[in-house]
Length: 317
Image (tube, rainbow, N blue to C red):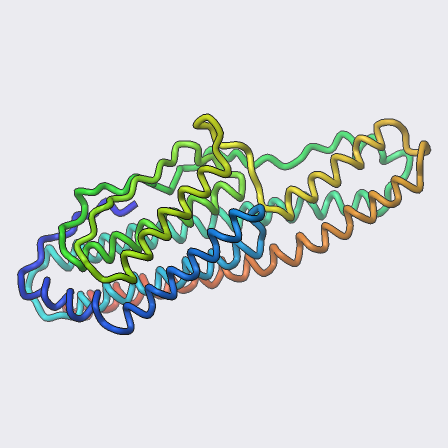
C-alpha cells in the first residue's frame, strides 16, 4: 500500500504541520479516541473469537481512519504553494490507499454474498429434509473462499516512504492501522493472506502522547492477532465466530445423517433447529456488517471525487 513517495516539506510547512495537524486539541482528542477503539478491539479479540459484531466495529474504525486521512490530505492540499510534485504526491498517495480500501470492500461484499448463498441453500435443504434428501445434505460441500485474487494488503510499509517530520509520521501511522485492519478482515473472511507481515517503523517524529499511544495500540493488536491465529509461522484457517458455529452445527448434523435418517429422528430434528437458529444469527450479523462495508465504500468514493474536483478546480478544469 502507498507506493507514492512523500516529498520533502519546507521548514515553514513542517512547522505548520507540527502546530496545526499533529498538536491541535481536536487531533489529540481524535487519536485518543482511536486508541481506545483499538484497545477495545484488542481486548475483545484476546478474550473471544472474532465475531461479526467485532468486524462491524473494526469497519467503523476503518471508516473513521479514512475520514481523518482524507481530511489531512485535503487540508495540506489547500495550502497555497506552487510545488506541483507535492500535490501529485498527495494525490497519488490518497488514490492508492483509497483504491485499496474500495477493493477490500468489494472482496468482503463478494465473500459475504457467497456465505449468505451457501447458508441459504443449507437452510432451504434442511427445512424440508427427509430420508431422500439426507444423503445429498450429508455430502454438501462447505464453502471455501480461496480465491486467487490479488493480495491487496502490503503489511510492510516501506520506511523510506516517509520523511522524518510530524505530518508524515501522522499519515504513516494511519496507513499502518488501516493496513492491519484490512489484513484482519481478509483473514477472517477466508482469503489467502498468509504472506502478510506487519513491519512497523518504531521511529516517530512527533512527541505527542496520543499519537504515540495509538501507534503502540496498533502494534499490540497486531501482536495479539498473530499470537492467536499463527502457530509455527503458519496461519490456521479461521473465520468469524458465527460462521464457525454454523459450520460446526452442520458438520454434527451431517455425521448424524450418515448413520441413517431414521436412526434418531428426534435428535436430527434438534440439530435441524440448531442450524436454523444459527442461520438467523448469521444472517443478522452479515446484514449489519455489509451495511457498514457499503458505507465505507461510499465514503471513500466521495473522498476520491472531492479530491479530484479540488485538484481539477485548482488547475482550471
